[in-house]
Image (tube, rainbow over all chains, first blue to last red; front, side, top):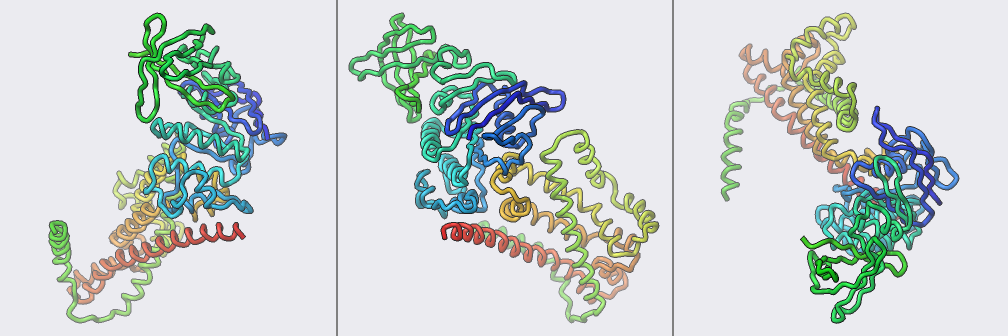
Length: 296
Length: 248
């Protein structure tokens, strides 16, 4: 079921937060909504979930007008920045709470899918932050939603857990056929997860497109994004980078670094400039994104 | 070891003044039973009213903004700044006009004055601690308001519920002047029973009444504790049942 948002405006009193937003999410896709803080991303997400009322415009789920429908009539689940598990219940009970009537999915299967097998009887305080977020994901997906809304669910996690969770979310949503909307201000997250990206600024959609294409042209992704590079074995110490100006450049890998469980490469450009390169696995076919930051 | 000593000494210091309350003989005053029944009924009704009003108002103050909400917050806090007796004098005259003076309901309503501001404050803080996102998550997960309260919000606010009940009980038991003024001696509560007995030198009967003043909050606290524990156990069992029935 596609989600179509047409000419949506949102005002809080005199303040215009969203202005004429048009957006389309194709069924089964993962769409990222990126932009700086205060650009209206989360407000738009909340409008889709039904947690805020639309001032003007329409929100359609398939052919059904959902503009004024109650949140629980929309078949939407949401992952917030915090896991928001219910502390008086066990992990298993939290997940069971999400299971809709007639939804015959097995609890054990869900626990295994999110890597929490054997933790059904654990209480929330007995889990780590990453485990809590995974339990929260299982609860969200066990209800068999049409749409999964992600409101920066990785922001409370460290980098390795962040990467682990986004891979898990993407794998499960593809397997379950759940349409996903991710709100983030992290360009790497958008690159890693999305099939399509919308860029927001000051309450408006200012750019949209395939993540790779967008990364090459959108100022939001900055100058530090290089794409379509090929890694050679470290012994060959060569890396092809394509900076935003479209020119390819050979750089030399001088050092391999591991920081917080994430692998980085120190490279030297032909100009002598040193960069630290971090790879980002994406779910786009044959694409590995290279996020580059200048040393120092 | 050190903790045990501190607990022992503290317990001893609390209990010593109470030793004097133990009467040498028990003379069951039949009026005391009637007073006890009125007191317990009053506390139960007052607690339920406080929970109902405090829950709704506390939630509104915690999550809504606007001038109306801020004005309401200030209005509700007024009894914390003004002497309650001053407000009750005004209410007394109104109650006479409405026929509520010397009535159980009249006393019940006036006892809201010293209790409700604290109740609302406790619920506001509890809702703020839960957070707006947690409330929204509940809305997305459980459509029915009643089920949402029974399965989620209620059990998660156990501490607030406990605090409110205990606070309301202790404040209601201590209100001598308010109950005398509005109840006019017709609505008898334990404090009203005990005070004249002390001043009239009927020490044995006074001690009996005072012991009830001491016992009632503990009794209510433990009964409530058991009920809340049973509530959470039932919720867990029901959730496990939901899962089992879904599998069949």
